View 1 (cartoon, helix red, strand yellow):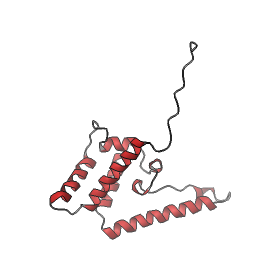
View 2 (cartoon, rainbow, N blue to C red):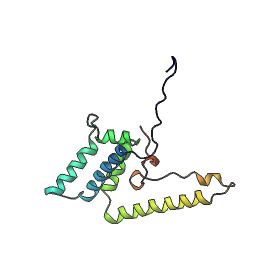
View 3 (cartoon, rainbow, N blue to C red):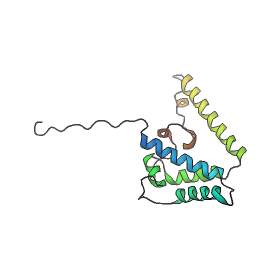
View 4 (tube, helix red, strand yellow):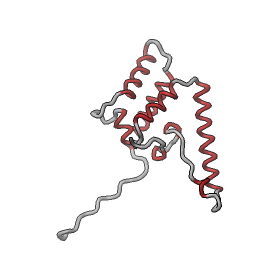
Length: 146
């Protein structure tokens, strides 16, 4: 290698990585436990709820898969994710599924708007995705890093 020449580092993959997939899975499981065991008063169900609650509310940076580090890895704002998780956890079963159906409906409409938008309507193509939990691709989240 000549002087002044440096090896170029290989480009980082832009798609999902095993670490991000695991982080997203941990985050989704905590959200499910908070929603599913919200009204538990004893036993294992209450322990699962309290464990998920303490994980989401902790501001721990030491553990690699702490809530804050998971949010950082997924490039989302911890405060925004917390607010969304706790808002979903307090919804009833019907309210929760109604919200999810509304999110799916908006994404489908946005897809059609992008697919059929003409040159005369460029603003129709600028549609923002909704909610991190309802997306399969964490790169399209609405909560930026704080």
